[in-house]
Length: 197
Image (cartoon, rainbow, N blue to C red; front, side, top):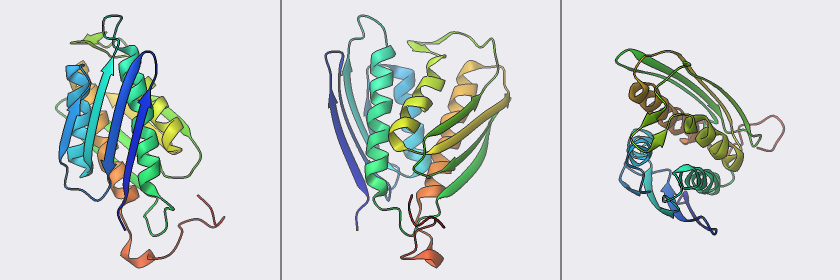
């Protein structure tokens, strides 16, 4: 059974199409108009082994906020759709990823209950190209709200803003991959004592 999610989201500010295949090989086709964000979404697909297509047209003449936010909302909704009934998955995933001087630790629960805990070093460079570094938390908030997952992201140290943000996306990709993968020992079983996720 294929685990593919596809979401089209159109507002007066943006037009977004996201498609994700949880059982892919890491093939990506990303275009948001924000170069660094494209790079981060590429990391998500490649390290999660998700086939990921993202096409966003937004009001970049204002700034990148709406484009980044609406893409994250659509991505979360597509991820949730692709998970389906969640029967037979691991549910939990965790990963720590270093990138030179920076380290990201990510833990996820595909719980059906959206919750985010996010910490990263203060006083980072405010911009990476067109990417406002304060948007990382907002991306995660938007993704979590639509994917309906619990997500803890902690960057205990790092100096370079590029490294700090990138290791978060790489660790998120791996944690989501582990959590969403099918567990051969739990085929046909919903990983919840409540009987619902």
